Image (tube, rainbow, N blue to C red; front, side, top):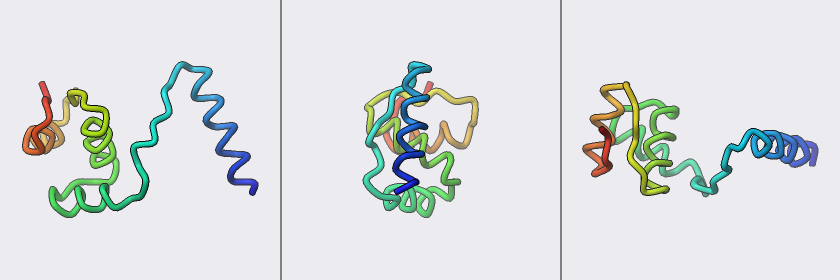
Amino acid sequence: MAFVADNSVIVAKAERFGLEIHDAFDSVSPLVSLMRARGMTAYDASYLHLAAFLGTPLFTRDLSLRAAARAAGLMAP
């Protein structure tokens, strides 16, 4: 129960900074699939999955992440 309270505090602080909270991750399965299929880190897979979920381009200077985004059919200028 303490975790839920702590989580609420974190969400409230994020929203005060104008950050949006998204429910893009029902489980870690999409991340694990991306990590295995593309040989990427959980961090990079999170960004790739979120961009796909939101239907937005993925802006990054990371060339391998950009290539993975393009291979997944995302716009990655």
